[in-house]
Image 1 (cartoon, rainbow, N blue to C red):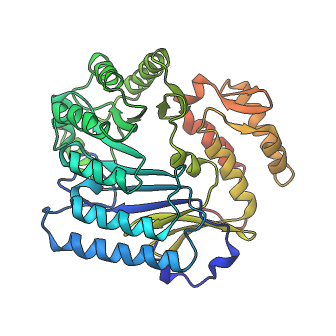
Image 2 (cartoon, helix red, strand yellow; image 1 turned 120 degrees about the vertical axis):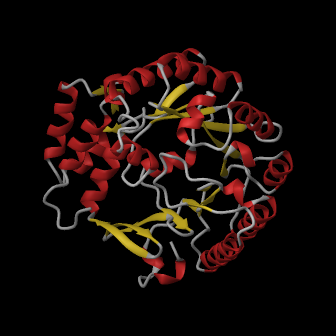
Image 3 (tube, one colour; image 1 turned 120 degrees about the horizontal axis):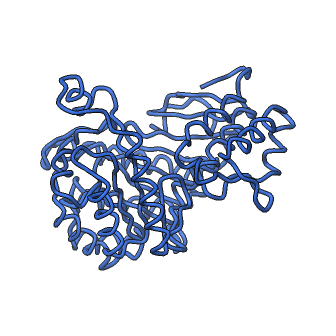
Length: 386
């Protein structure tokens, strides 16, 4: 979101509780990537110009009073660590001057294994970074090559060890349904992640998006679409193994040891307004008139207050804690049909009622789109839609 482009006064909107900064550069676009990123050389002048522009956006947001309530910060991409230690330090130093990074602030930086160094980790830690999310995807070299990743398994293990020299809260991303992957190799990656003593693991089923390298390979019959049944089996393997090793599933695709769930991601699922800065970054703001999502200063989506409440129910069901009965009742005062939706989901054994809350069942983890789709359908008939 380019701060200066919006015409509405920010004073009418709830304070932003989360901040996302987007770094759109990487060494190479992976075969599955459809994110707003581009591969450039490490010395490309475009990186320097972009970082300078992003620093100006941060300062402008601070002067406009948009950062005073921020509790979580997330720098993602792309590959933030690809831009180099000096540029990344300059960016984070600007942040440290522009908002209150108190000890409770969760500050995450995404990293790829091949571009993370010990001097960088030390500098980021000294500037207030409390969490690193490392894009490992797999600890199998054949699977990494199939994905088009730059790093190998040994580099991934080394990067985790490097991050943990200063930062206690280290997360890794893994994928399931990768070409050349089977249940055995997937479980081996899960085991390696746990043995590396990370505190958080996210597992994402591979999806093939249009206009990606994988989509082209499928069009040329060089690979098949991911097997959804196999992916479901892999997610169940992950759930059983991680639970047995002290991890708790707090969100559909994420597990954490106690005390290390990601506050920033949870903000997305619980209706916390978030500011997105940088090219392609998405933000969300809301006031009494409704909810808006913005990208590059333009409104992408407008939701009525009732739609926003229904969206909060839908996104809340991504989390193991679900949503409170009181919240469902409040929505039902505007949309009575929502009670029928939750009754139907209970009958389908996708939702359970426990201690005053509607929570997803183990079956719902595998059929999430069914849950989310039925809840969102209750928003039909509102004057503004997505």
